[in-house]
Length: 262
Image (cartoon, rainbow, N blue to C red; front, side):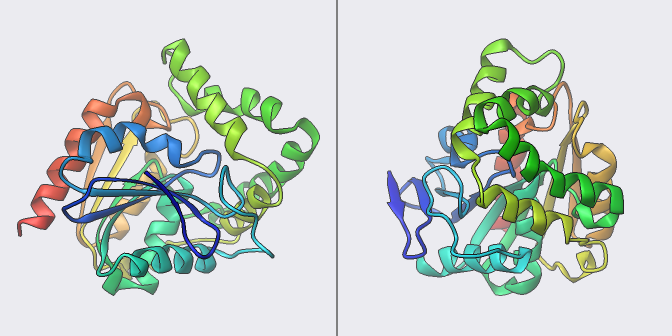
């Protein structure tokens, strides 16, 4: 089922009962990235995934967005459905999820953060490289941009059909100005000083072959959070939830079961 919120966000929804799980995709992706999680968890949870502002089927934002803006929009989505949510964020989506948990702790029951980072603002070179991505997208166009970047999101041994699917998802999702706003927000963000403020129980996962953010960045998150479990997913690159969905889904289901039956 699909829907549009008043803010022009395109949302994919599945499941009629159970706790709400809000899914926030990575900077080069869309709601389509969570198809394996919808299939595995949709029978027990109300699954909800957005196309971020300016991505895929969502409307373009009227101006630049900060990380706070993304977090506040996610909060609006949760409020529109009443109550609170468990939030699953991949990469950039994980950064938004963590900021959401500090700005709106009453709305976040728990967090599941996959292949994420404290933000690109932790290092000037990383910040510059992140901001430069918008220029690369402008020069190449979405298809060539995705062809260049998509394969690096998976392990070297990922099957060809998955590489093609990830690349196609990126090509259909990214455009300017939305991608540029997201890159600017990432470049300006350093979560290290606020991780201790996160009160929600958090599951941190990272593929052992992640070539984008890598296990070190996930370890920083896990080490800075008070209530956390940290899992390395074998034989997975950056998009572990798509490359090793059975393993990741088992950890997600275990986490959700624990936090909803405590």
